[in-house]
Amino acid sequence: MLWPPRGDGITDADLERLYAYPDDLDRPFVQVNFVSSVDGAVSVDGRSGGLGNAADKKVFALGRDLCDVVLVGAGTARAEGYRGVRATEVRAERRSRLGLSPVPPIAVVTARCSIEPSSPLVGDTAVPTIVLTAGSAPRERRDALADAGADVVVAGDGSVDPAAALRALDERGLRRVDCEGGPGLFGSLIAADLVDVLCVTFSPLLVGGDAGRIAHGPLPEAPRSLELASVLHADSALLLRYRRTRA
Image (cartoon, rainbow, N blue to C red; front, side, top):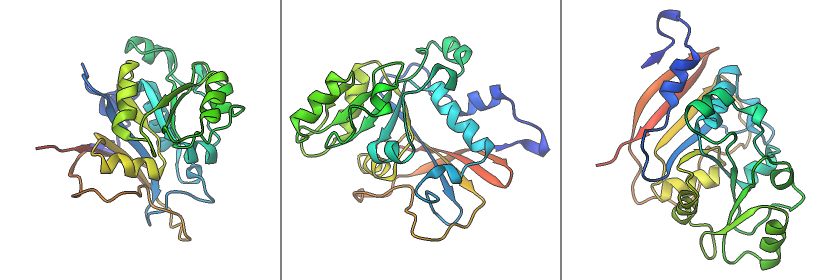
């Protein structure tokens, strides 16, 4: 599906329909969101914000409107200056109509509990941040984050097991998962075959340099097959949505 067709505009209702999660989920459903330059760079000067346009930012915000939880790696959270999602950053009418909580929590993946208890990601929140960590993380760091108000979850031994992390979210009733990166977390989800949808915006920029790609990590036993679900275009950017195909 190509939008907008014949130059017509696309409405908020159209976008909500295109990016909606399946109804009646019985397991976590992971939708990953990324922006990339056309030459494959995932960032400009270490941040993704220099790549997106207004349309990409609108779809990014829509992901937060529609989800139960925002999943992000600690490195991305630090680089992008994450804090808790604010009620003013989501559309209250949409979330209420869809039966969602007023704001989604952030779930941050950090094998060593590297988030500081004083971080805005922990202290500047409307709902407790979920910290998904490993059993090998220092106990004092886990305790300090819990004392600061975070919901600390051990999901793996030496590293965070993506499947265990999603089970922990499922236990909290959080099945609509909006993954905002970064590349390491995305790579681990690919390796574990836990990606259901990839939303990727290709920005009309040539960045060059040494910026990384949108995913890196363990090599899966075979590439994961996708099918193109929708295409949007705005200001020379392409906003693509791919669904995982399973036998």
